[in-house]
Amino acid sequence: MKDEELDNVDALQGWFIREMEVFFRSNGRKLMGWDEIAYDGMSSDAAIMWWRGDNWRVLSAATAMGKKVTCSPTSHVYFDYPQDNYVDKILKFDPLAMDLKPEQQKLVMGIQANVWTEWIPTMDRIEYMIMPRMLALAETAWCTPETKHTTDKFWDYIQPQFLRLDAMDINYRVPDIQGVGGNNVFVDKMTIAPYTRARNCVLRYTTDGSIPTSKSKLLDKKLTITKDCKLNIASFRPNGKRSEMVTANFVRSGYLQAQDVNPTADGLKVKWFNNKATSCADVDKGGLKRELVCDGIKLPKEVDKDRALIFDGYLYAPVDGIYDISLTSDDGSKMFIDGKEFINNDGLHAINKVQVQVAMKKGYHKVEARYFDYQDNTGALESSFKCVTDPNATVTFKH
Image (spheres, rainbow, N blue to C red):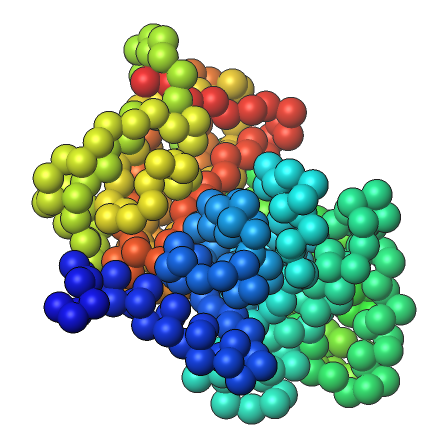
C-alpha cells in the first residue's frame, strides 16, 4: 500500500481490481464484477453486476460512466430467498424506469436471477425455489412494458404452464394461498374467501392444529369465523403433492382508541444512528448521525450505510376498521402502535416479512418502528398498511 501510495483498504481494492482488469484485457478477456467495484476506476469495457437490492444508485452511476450493467438485485431476483409475493415483485421490476437516460438504458444488458445453494440440499428443492418465479422472470426480462402482463393477468396466462409442469413432474411451488394468513382480528364475526392462483389445485383445512391432508375438509369459496381458532390451510395438486401450509390465527379484539392529538407535518420523523446494531434494542446506542423525514416506514434514500433507524410519529386511520399491517426487513425490525408491540421481526436474518391485523378506531395512532442492517450491503425495509374493511381507505402519516 505504501509503494502505491494507497491510503486505505478501499483504495487497495480499487488498485487490485484495476490491475486484474489489465491482466484480463491482455489475455483477450473483459472484467465483470459485483457492484462494490463500480467506483474503482475500471475502463468502460468493464461490466457491473448490480446485486445489492437497496443500492439502486449504482445502476445510474455505472451506466453514466459508460459501463454495462446486469441487474440481479437481492430485492427481486435472488431465488434462494423466500418466495412470499416474489412473483408480484418480479413483474413490477423495471430497471429501465430508474431515471436512466436513453444512452444509459442501452447499457443495461438484462436481468439475471441467482440461486445460492448453501442451504438447498437437493435438485427437488431447487425446482421448488425457482418455479414459478422463473416464469415471471422471463415475462419481465423479455416483454416490453406495453406487452408485460399485470400480476392478475399473468396468473391467468400461465395456467397451462402448471399443467405442463405437472406432466414434467417438476416440483414447483404451488402459488401462495391468497386471502388469508397470519394473525387476524375481528370484532363480531369474519368471513374469509381463501383461494389459490393455480386452478388445478383444491384447498383443504383443519381447525384442530393438525396438518391438512387430502382427506381434510374441503374449503369451498368462503368460511365464516365466529370464535377464536387456529386455521391451517393447504392446497393440493392433482398428483397429491401439498403446497406450503398457511396458518391463520383468529382472535376477537376490541378497537384501539384514537389519540387526542393533531399533528400537522407530513411523514414520520426518522433518527439515523451511527451504529452497527445486532438487535432492535441496540439501534439507538450509537451516536445520532442525522434526522430525516420519510413518507412511510421504509429505507430513506439518504441512508446508504450504518443502517440503524428509529421511525416516530402518527398514522391516521381514516375509518373504524381492521387493518392489515406488514413489516419486511433484512436484518431486524419491530413496530409499535399506541405503545404496544405488534410486529417483532428482530434479529440477524435474510429478508423476512411479518404481517398482523389490528383493529383501530378512526383517528391518529402513535407509531414507532425500529430497524437495523448489520452487514451494510443487503439491507431491506418495507411496510404496508391496508384497511381490510374498506379497501378504499388510505393510511397516512404525520408528526
